[in-house]
Amino acid sequence: MSLPFYPSTSSNPEHISSIVAGASHFLILTFPSSRLFSIGDNRYGQLGIPHSPTSITPSLIRIDTFDGIRIAQISAGAFHSVVLTEGGEVYLFGSDKEGQCGGNGGGWEPTTNEEFGEIGDGQDEEASEIVQVRAAGESTFLRTRAGELWVCGASECFPSPCISLYDKDPDDLRGDDRSFRSIRSICEGKIHREV
Image (cartoon, rainbow, N blue to C red; front, side, top):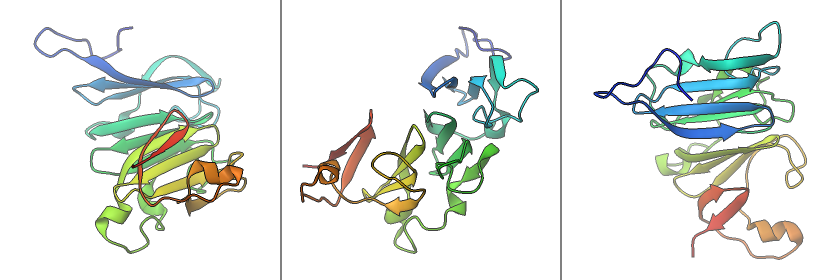
């Protein structure tokens, strides 16, 4: 797949560094330019562009909101998108039906984590610095450098819209009483704890 507007040259090759998929939309991050593209269903603004007359965007669109911003990670839920910058800012856009975009209404204009105000709650910088993001279904997961896991939205495990600290082992959801303090990474729907 070639990227529109930014052809690679031998002196400045452009590569796709990450592709993520929601229910019917994709985000594509390039390297070394850190440009973000989207394609697919835009009915909730999850492509990061204003709604079009038809909700499907059949070609790659550059999300110019992020021009000049170094992006560290991207993730996609069913109908929302998440971007983590190298500076630790989180941008959420798309459906906010279950609070997965921070409960601020969603849409194509990104909401940043600065608007949450609750993460770290005045603690030291390590407690509030977001280092990893993941989206799944109608939820967004944010992990801080201190290992705290914050959840925005709802799922079977988190049945009501929220921005809350979840500091329990996933096995606790099944009744076991084993908790832990530090979460190392979030991947493929699982939470991995430090040993």
